[in-house]
Length: 453
Image (cartoon, rainbow, N blue to C red):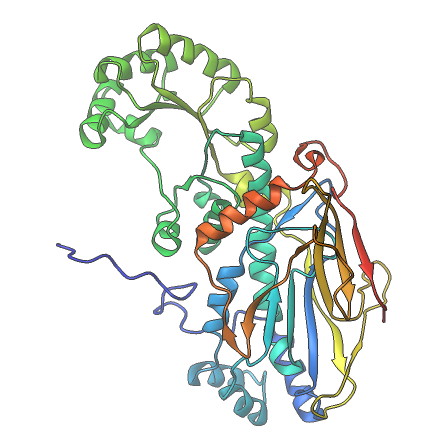
């Protein structure tokens, strides 16, 4: 088959033939609330919803916002087509009046948010949705599922890349999670500094660089390790990476150097005491004259094992399970709460703050505005949250909320590289304590300013 043109990038979070609409990626009760609000006449009341975390995962010092671009794509495809409405009516999730309303659904409100790659703290208004109650409530589950997953992955990835320093990290966890979650995880990891992924769909869909060579099965397929290595080098060139721990690492290293005349690109170590093994392999490579051959390590790495390998002669890391499971924290703990509503259904009616008061699950009423207070040297000092109005701040403070949707029109899409660069800048302005791997509290406090409801 001859391909004369590259395939166009997908504009939806799934292929069109798989999921033509994202509207049913939601919970049943979002639509029963809508149904009841329509009947009560309150569905069109102006409201403000906010997505935030009450706390960071235990021991974490900062979180990373990810999934913004995916959420905006999902919003673009959030519609109720005939097939979707038939399903809802057949299951009696909605009645005819609600189905009629949904048939004409289009989000017409405004959304502000922390841009992708930004860091966040407890209480940070990561997303602010201002719309009618009906338009805002039906987006709750979709937004939470994307932000909770992607931000958890990016937060773990950020800790790994800061620990790795200038040594590249490669995401390779596709076989350790659900297939579409793997694609999202690769994207989120890239935002937080990973250099590449093994997942080809992440490469096609989001442009994340992809890497990969061979597994132990390829070596075992051949009669000898020499046959396997020769076949791989013939197909992929001398710059390839040979997996050298199928049998004996040192015999394999010698063989790889021999077959490439000392020009072997890299060797991969996937088992054993990686620090000790990497040191011994480096010594052997140098003795054989393969001083430019790199050492890549894999095998259940996380930020702690990466830190433990900092003194070892390792050139890059491949991370799988720990990354795609958020390194022990697979969700960010984000919630989506109604924080303000109009006092009536009259156009222009003022907003009043509303808040949940139950024990350990309180929220703070009122529409939020956020800046990051920084010292004269540009170091972050606190997360300053204004309630119902922007907080007083000075020229060293940095505005955090940016427009993502205006009047229903998506305005916040950007290249993935922009999010990646933003993360580097946002992380760099944090106090040095943020970069410690020991368990700790959020590295800066969250302070509220203004009236509370």
